Length: 573
Figure 1 (cartoon, helix red, strand yellow):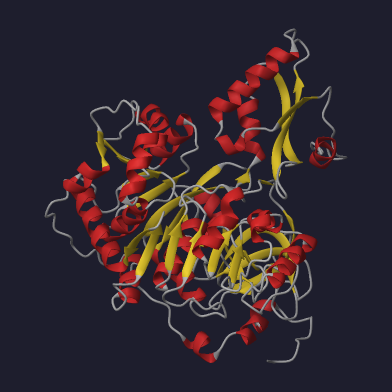
Figure 2 (cartoon, rainbow, N blue to C red; figure 1 turned 135 degrees about the vertical axis):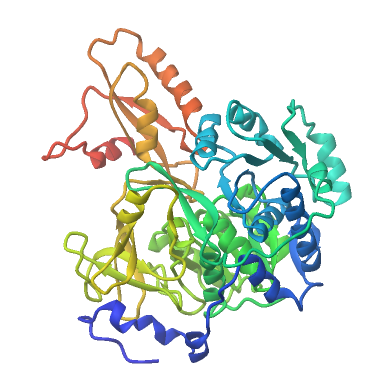
């Protein structure tokens, strides 16, 4: 290992993190192919290995590829063609995994949408990408039914979480969960959908590696939702780079994935990465954090992807008292930061339970296919989010001048690498705001986060330029979206959404809305409050619902006339 660098060097020039990689890691060539092809080439000699575990139903890689092809034929039979966008509104099930790779196989584009969105929100995503097809889980169908009314959607494919359950569990589920939905003529259930594929011919779609293969949704610097276009190379680069780091993925290992499919972290890191490594992805469609310890004891996963609060739940779970967790070699935490005391408590917990390595923290964003930096086994420092992945460059720039700063100096974190998004769907202005060409001639993603890099290449995040509220489960809530909804009430003069601690969870925050009413309002505040709550339920996804609404006589303002959000957070705590 080389000596520590002088702190006056530029990170992008010296790349001090490369000392943690082997010569083989540094010289390996990244794949240039579709996600499906990379998955197949990685497992063509591992077809009898277990790819997916879904409530103890084990699906081999051979079955995985067969089901992907059948699903691709079914989409073709329903009229889906290359570059068509199919809106997917579901939690993770094997059918969603099949659909994701099937669309990659035929060149269609899945538009991943959170099933908790309101009907209006789902409709916006349908219209935004001109989707004519929807695939949804049955529990979300009532909202989808409202969303597709009067739209261009021609076909709605409806699946049940029971489709791939073992027989006994499937029967029990069907008896306990009666489907009372009233389906219209445009709907087709999953079994009929698959049967429609018949003998449809599958043809190779050339040159797909750099084209959009999926659309996922995020919030921008103003809080407005944007459609992030990711390509096959983005997902493959993520899997490839983790295959060339000190975290070792081996065939036959198990990966507990509790993250949803509609975020890049959930599918890229929780599904594509383990599958391309020949690892079994254990699918948990909807996690109850109180049951996490039981899942870990049952499946004994070597790897796990979660958010920091998941690990904090484990600290106080008596079921783990005296238990040996030496099988867990890679407990990953992303989606949110974690304080140093909380991190050290988790690390001490791991040590006491014989887990060899500390918490594996990571850092990234949807625009970077989830991950740019990660701690790697013993390459770990408290408070850091790790080192850049092997083919990724991270540096720090002055947000005002654009000048690259030296090691140890604080500025905006920027990233240059193979997981960089294609751009935002039909939004060139926002794309140009986030992806900028620097004086070195390279394109860099501006993260909006303030931090620094130390002499070993470890990245530390200090603050966020963007206003964002991060829940206990890692979901990001953008205040502007809530403010836009609340401002629709005719009695509201001004409103501001800020963060308040989630007192029911060990970590995380919830949105609190402060409202100043118009001076001529005569209605009782109780009535207005009830109307605002109803308005939020109609306009916002479940996870964005305000936990608290407070009326103020006036807003606090800074010296330059902006709302003082920190002052509001102080009274919200």
